[in-house]
Each structure stands twice: as C-alpha cells, then as structure tokens.
Length: 273
Image 1 (cartoon, rainbow, N blue to C red):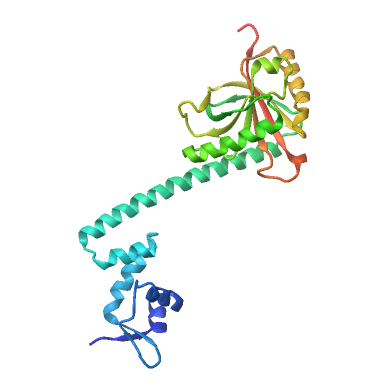
Image 2: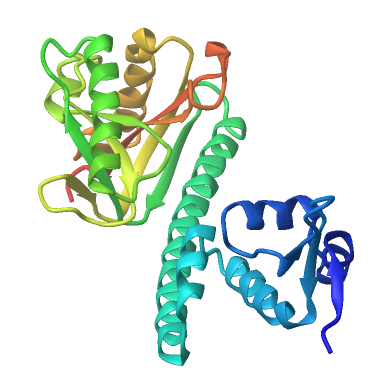
C-alpha cells in the first residue's frame, strides 16, 4: 500500500523547502503523483522517494537541473556511469580553476604584504628564483597613457588566451634607457605568470638582484632610479638586466595613490666578474 505525503511533509522528510518542490513541479523535474482537483494540494507517494533521492544526489554534484531532468527521462547503469564520469571531469576542471585563482590571490596578498613591510626608498639585495612574465608591447612615445593602455590590452589578451597570470601588473625599462636616464620609457608591460608561453613571455632566470621601493607619483621614479644606480656604483655592482617594475600596491588594491608602491628591480653582478 502506498503512503502519501503532503508537500510540507515531504519537504520536512527530505530536508528540502516547499518552494524547491514547487519549482521542481513547475519545470517538470519532479511532479506530485496526485493533485487534489478541489484545492490544488499536491500529494506525493512513497514510490517517488527514490526518485527525489536521485535528484538530490545529482544536484549535489553540481549538475544543472535541466540536465538532471533530461537524464531522468531514460537512465540506466551505463548512462549513469557516463554521467558520473563527465561530472568528475567537470569537477576536476573547476578545482583546477579555483586553485589557480587561489594562487593569484595569495601572490597578490604577498605583494601587498611586501609593500607594507618596506619603506620608501629602501634598497634591498636579494636572490630571486626563476619566474615568467607575460608581456605586451608599449607603443611610442611610451607615455603613462600608453603604458596604461598596454596594461589593459595585456590583461584582455591574457584572459582571451587563458593564460595563468597573476593579479600583479608591471613594466620593463630597458637597460640602455636606464643607463641613459630615460627612466619613464618603459617598452613593455607584464603580468607574472605560472609558466612560459611561446612568443608571449620573458623568462627571468634565478639570480642576484638589487631593488628599490618607490612610493608616490610614478613620474618621480627617476629619483629612485638614481639612488639605485648610486648604490650599485658604491657597492661595486654592475647592472646586467632591464629594470622590472613590479606594482606591489596600486589601483587594484587601494584608492589612495599615496599608498602606491613599486619595486624597481635589476639583476646585478660584481664588477670584474
């Protein structure tokens, strides 16, 4: 003999809301076996409980309701196996994507912490691990507007290509321009990325670096560069690379331009080696 449940009783027994069951009825996913023609009350039979369990299990895997409805129209052991295989692949894809987002957030947080733990004009020597920069060219005359536009295009292209980049922006000042005092003529912008991409990335090999932390208007970066150059000269260090300008704290994380900090980093070696 069948046992009958009102919508409220079934909702309480299965741990779902009445609104959920009403919606399932409207979209044809799970309909009551009987509806009272006089008052419109919905009644579900005990024979339907297994079907609702199946729906809830499928929903818990992240499967869209429309797909669940189609699956239940004619499902078997083989079709269930195929569906579960596909669900696992999709879940693995989402996990991978979330791990990438988490890594980007961790790296961004690390850059803010680096910014807040250093003072304006502070110079630091450090050994750096290998890293990769996803780059985009800046068009002449290399104005701040040109750099800003190139950064937007770099972000857009990275997204379109599915490049695994960080939420940190930067620019590259060629060594010859650095030596000539042309401190604002950055020719490329970049986003740190997880690995090399043919024709898109610059590889920074592990090496010894000198950095200075620049705070305030970027137009005054030359003052910081001159201090960096003087430091290298005084300590017998030769600059061997472009300057890599990492925006540790910028418009992405603060509205206060007075909090902006850029790390200006060059690779060096001892003079005479």
